[in-house]
Amino acid sequence: MAEPRSFAERKTHALAVLAEDGTDVWVATASTDGRAHLVPLSFGWSDGRVVLATEARSVTARNLAANGAARLGFGGTRDVLMGDAEVTASYPLAAAPPELMDVFARQSGWDPRGDSNAADYVALELRFVRLQAWREANEIAGRTLLRDGRWLDE
Amino acid sequence: MAEPRSFAERKTHALAVLAEDGTDVWVATASTDGRAHLVPLSFGWSDGRVVLATEARSVTARNLAANGAARLGFGGTRDVLMGDAEVTASYPLAAAPPELMDVFARQSGWDPRGDSNAADYVALELRFVRLQAWREANEIAGRTLLRDGRWLDE
Image (cartoon, rainbow over all chains, first blue to last red; front, side, top):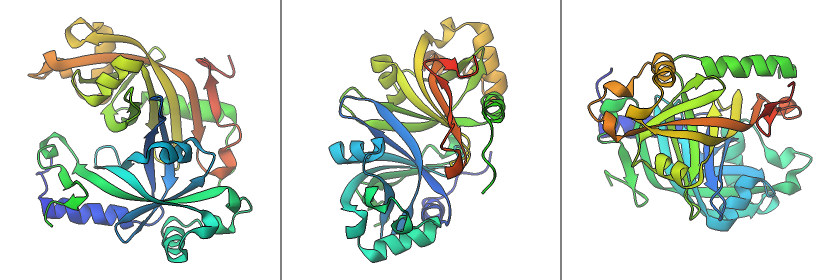
């Protein structure tokens, strides 16, 4: 087992994972009647926000519209970056800030504005309420990087 | 984009993913009041059942005790194996069938029966209600492999 990383190493790694091109995020949401949903989605990382684009009728979009809360898993399962997040803005795709969708499109390699069913999509902006990073059991201590929306070194 | 795989290719791949050594599964559950939880866990695949071991006080164990339903994500996010599953049995670790825990320990590389806090753990057996496999957009059609607990070629 590798030596546990410092807070600074984990934060640097977390920001690199969030800015990586062409990766997806596992998005867990729940319906108001307590049914879990999980799906991998393309994402962007813009100005401290996670940007998602998904069909308005999808289970994820409907759950987020109802309760605004998601749990996001990035990276491999033995190099985990895990966040509790809340929706800070939701836009019909055509009304989303162009600079937000530019970041999303560049990072994910997919621009939903060019899709034939673009009108079916919503863009969602989420902020982390909590963010944790760990690899193996010896990194469980010190895994919290951000709490109540603030990095712990801020 | 690669050619879409046949049902048989996807099923073969799914069974290989489920039997793979040393990988984890993303487990999404929901509390009865509609709060999503997500965590990566070690797993085993024994006789058509997913086997998990987790602390009884963990959010995952408590959600599963309350509603018995999970959504399980395997593999990478661009080579997805995704299942809706239900708990078919739950055991205090000491009461779990030894052959079940032997499969879990061999496949995951971790035998919780040897942990100092083994008494804190539960073993859970889950069956798939639905299982889907897809890589890219051209595999969305035909992604369902198992429905209502049965493989579609059965």
